[in-house]
Length: 281
Image (cartoon, rainbow, N blue to C red; front, side, top):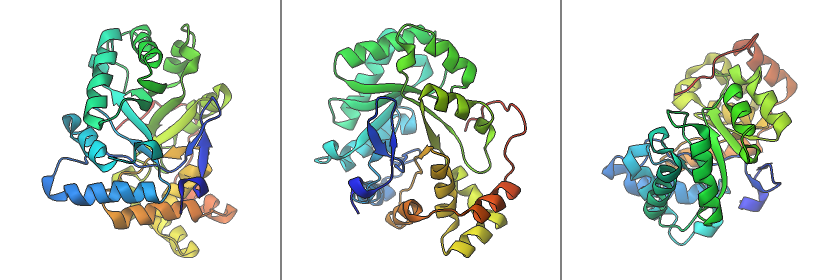
């Protein structure tokens, strides 16, 4: 299976990226697992899961270093994402943090650079840093993570702020609050939504209702949970340090949830009935 045959999702400028990618939170922190984690990331790229998401925060740069090693010789095959910590996110700090990430990742550019969450620096400062990086050719797109509607409205009102490409947020069957306002706002504004922890760091897999739907479809609970996110028009970046789990995750792209399955999941995991504060892990 190649990247071309895997499901894709569009960025605001029309560029299409893999809808199902790979996260790296907690990867690179255990030397005993390093080779397996590298093999998992490489296999994911082989299977078309070519969005690879990381952050300077993950293992204080260890995840970025792992990704850099895993992608050696394959950089042009992936859409590479990293994030700047809020306390680095003034204009100069954003540029410096990105340059540090590039060094750890062994690359000259990022495809997408995100503000990890909002901190003390004004959004104008971070946006200025993103603009400098774009002009220098060090990033191709920029976006945010863990920002709610009010933050995005504020950001979009700034000069150049409407170029935000992605909002990466916590979204899964058990965390559906964004369906009330954030997800509709992003759809209207053309901002791509990307889900982190799409299986709630594995906790969702114990849910009996999810297991029942999976059994009825001849799939695994993880595949159903991921397929559900993808059918909402949201990209997903599940983390896996195991090749077997990567293969399992990839199966979600071949799974279509019929109406009866969606109804059963709605009954077990209720959609929001009103505004919900943005949840963060």
